[in-house]
Image 1 (cartoon, helix red, strand yellow):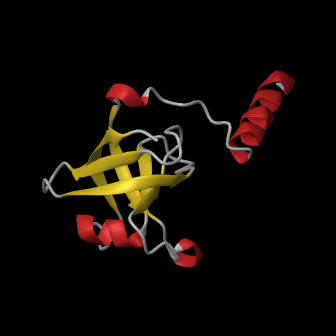
Image 2 (image 1 turned 90 degrees about the vertical axis):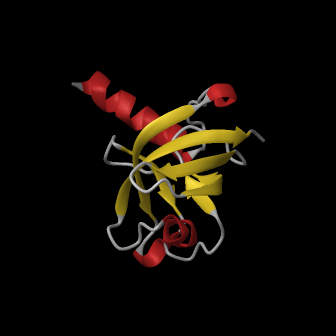
Length: 116
């Protein structure tokens, strides 16, 4: 029990310090759900996003798997947290261009197009 709590604490500390494990960005493709920053976090007006492991400065194409619409965003934050199916948090501007602000969540494919 204590070991599990220690691991969770160390992971939280690593994420806070920005030391999340880095995904192999050379051929990275991920499927899951996209959400967008809302409420008090809705101050991002640029084409940006949060991802759990991709390096900051990575440019990715996010494609809505149902509609085929896509946007290109720059990773500048960590997240989303709490739901393992959610793979990327988009700025409201990016979510609006992707057409997901009404439903708030959408099935997407995230593809790296340029590494930092």
